[in-house]
Length: 493
Image 1 (cartoon, rainbow, N blue to C red):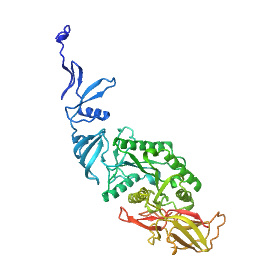
Image 2: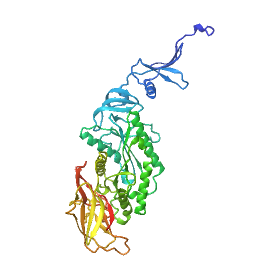
Image 3: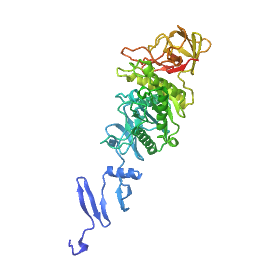
Image 4: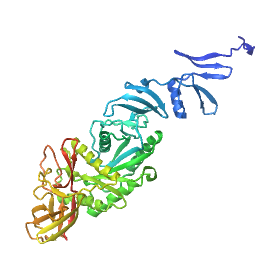
């Protein structure tokens, strides 16, 4: 070989060699790159190509638009998924598609995992569905166990600092939103119906009646964007099932009207972040918050409890679904719902949401009219079924079943369902119904206050009642769920 004679220069050679063979070679056409399978797969994913067969080739465009021959890798081995019992691995756009036997209620079926890494989801039909929530205190309680349908109920969130970007992640703990998703999936599973993929997430709302902080709204907006991205990458549409909200004592204002205005403003602000044209109708799903078990001062609780009542009666332009009153769910010694209570709450929310999606009525008994005739008060409730005064009084409402009179010295002697109207309650007083000194009006309360509570194994808020309708369904903990009446307060007419 002589530098003076170009004819002596070899036309092929190796510039860089690895243990498993040449990495960079050259020939008369230029450089030849031998890329690792993982690199080829990543290039194919980015270009929307499909890797199949060791001999296949594709062309990737470099930054200077020069075509570079890229050798495609062999059909991926299930080992790229990790140490799971998987088989029949295929590539489907940005996803691996495979059969597997995985933990959880799903068992053996087709699954998907992003080729860039992340969680494993079940392959499902129809739109990807979303369940998100904003709330404080009792609303954002979680417990350290994944959903039963852990590959149908997942999250898509911004990574924490130092974490890689993931399109979808499996949940390691259960929140109110994922418990609701789990309950919806379980009901369809038991009925052998199609099981959707549900993306969930929640954001903490700080205490106070002020506007929703911008960072909370931006967090919700980011979750919705990522939710849509998951659906798009799967070639599906995104459908928002519901937004769980929890205006209550954590957002207590100085007055009932202030609470009502603040709650409406919060719903307005949240609605403004939802792309309705893309995700569909906004359904706000709530459970009235009756406060913690030690909050026994009716006057202190009244702005929040009556404010929620006003929000139910006048939700503005918002579609508000009230699943249940919060007093039916047990709390721990910190005033947070127990795990069993949170699962019961998810069941009630699932029944309410399914009814709304099917355009069926779901109405927890709601105080609508309070009229007096001598020492008898007729309280008429809006309800889907006849009323029942539960003799078991499971929440300890007392002999008045949660009813109380405000603005008078008179008390309640007896409470019964009206014989001429199954949707009305007759309340007899033990004194003359006259206004107390300084009282603006006489009012009938239901589940607004109650006697002081002593801590017990199962704590229920003292703002509770014993009135419900005839609807019932089995609860996850083996008890029976009922549709209890919502807290309310009306001026006597």
